[in-house]
Length: 204
Image (cartoon, rainbow, N blue to C red; front, side, top):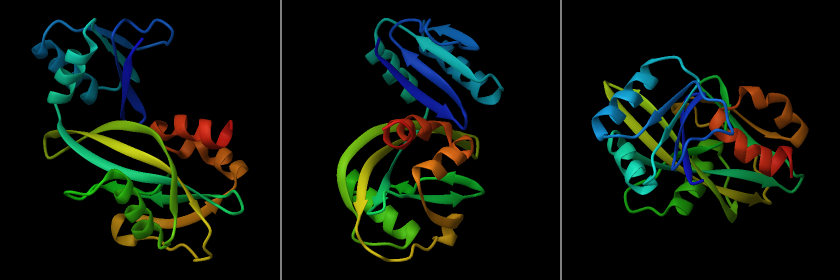
């Protein structure tokens, strides 16, 4: 089964090429046309259902139609590991998060991820070791729906700079956390990041 998962805070929509019977969903929606698809997404976004599975046999067309509902944005960020096998986390607007931000015009995602880590955490010299799975999430602002794709990279850091938060971006704290400490706060981390963290930290 081919699928895309889009997070709405800690709720999500799975777009797939067949009904996803392996997971429990609050709602299912079979794709018929773009108007009904738009209505289903708008209803989910304004409601409180924890999950929705939208499915259709032509996944490429369905995914294109789904994305056309939103204004697209692109971001990049990093999961940074230091020489002590600690991981760099921030507290943004009261919630644990990984450093990330919008990609600038003409900027490659990898370069944007490195820049955002430096800007948001006050360190330099981190290096990308490999790409991680991208995540998708949606939000509304000023009566407009946005869909953001975030490119993620695993990074290594061998420096000794003390991290400092970029407070102008709503970041109040920056910390190096052990795997055990990450496990202790996982319920306070965005659902969209937990799949990455389970694979990279919690269940290596």
